[in-house]
View (cartoon, rainbow, N blue to C red):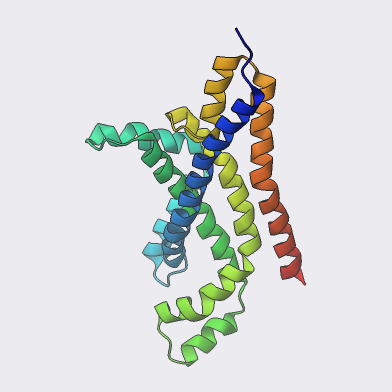
Length: 214
């Protein structure tokens, strides 16, 4: 049997990496939207929204991502909701990202001087207006470095979705390795692709952190 061309392996893996990037963007943007809602509940003046948000964050941060994906992929069909691997991966990673982003942003909100909120209240701004115009813009800017750092973790976390059958980079790598029997070549290229995706983000997060510190 003729050896599988390395160039073809590279091309197939790069094509599969598109799904990794796409899933990462969906999870980060969706997790950001949900995370803002969770954050709003977490810093609410009433006790019951804070308790619900705290329980949500604690549950998702204290359980393995793989278990969360299993609950979505195998649990929803039990109640009559048919779900494909792409949707299960998107929902699972979105929930996962929302818990961590809400916690990151909460730290930014709590780091703001109390005078910011008090000044906004003195100007007659309601709670939603205070959050939208005063508190969140500063908190999001302050926590941008850890948010970008979490994005790096999210890129690598997409590899777990191969377990439920989603055809991202690791799923494609396993299939190609089974066909070529060249694990060193295949997984070496996969490592290089992950490095190419993550290293620029890591460097950017470090630059943001240094800029914020100054």
